[in-house]
Length: 100
Image (cartoon, rainbow, N blue to C red; front, side, top):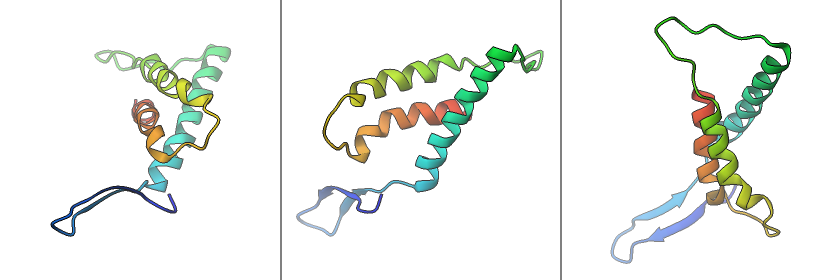
């Protein structure tokens, strides 16, 4: 996030598109993703549950976790340096998990 990715430049006007990451969203989303995963594992190990409201269904935490793993797994074994836009799809799934 020190140097933004330069995506597009218009030849007729001064329009430029950059991809600049927000550190609060990227680092906060990653940290909270880990916190949620640890919380889910500890709740499973200690057999504690939070009872949802009667009219609401429990959130399905496994959907964003599977989406994150499915979108991050192909990138995990890449030997070269990956850029910020490679992580856009896993970021969306981590933010969905944090919001749930």
